[in-house]
Length: 278
Image (cartoon, rainbow, N blue to C red; front, side):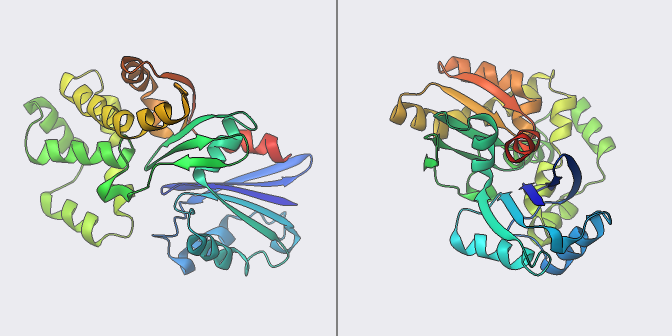
């Protein structure tokens, strides 16, 4: 049996492939920078179907955010090996998951816009080039964390219209103190910041909210897409992730200003990965 996992900072989608049957389940995101080993192991055990035994898993293909470095990959292997002792474990970045899902053996620019952001050029076999990942504090332009940070700034600096300030206060139980505590002392500050993006979606017709989203995507395009487009002479992009999916219309509008075409956007690569490994 094969086990496929596609993990971001917020959630991990798992699929057991036992041809012709599949079993899917979901756990919290497993980012090497943030996860708690004991909590994660217990959650996987609790979510694993009683129909299948972990020792029967022979292959694991784990695609994850934050898995670009060998040390990060080893951390995931060390997590999974005790659970699945007979499995051959392969670790890939989340960007490779998106490339496998949308491009396979075709060349193109591939990007993730979810809780975090990642982007690179896929040459049909591997990620040939990617812009440096600076994480949610210094980078992640266009991501849920980036947009959530802009929204929180607008709320606490009171630069939103009064009716949106009231709406935000009624939607979330939040104070400046509780926000700062969650960001600087919480377990997953990036996920916390990104959790406010549904407010952007609900109020995306508002001019002030549109400004936040448009500016976030402009930063993403100017700092990342244009650099890769000019380097490889490719002017189209394939996108995965909840932010790219839900704000696809605005992303297309911003990209068009720079003569970039958004070819395809999907929320998650997992359904396409199931086809690839079945």
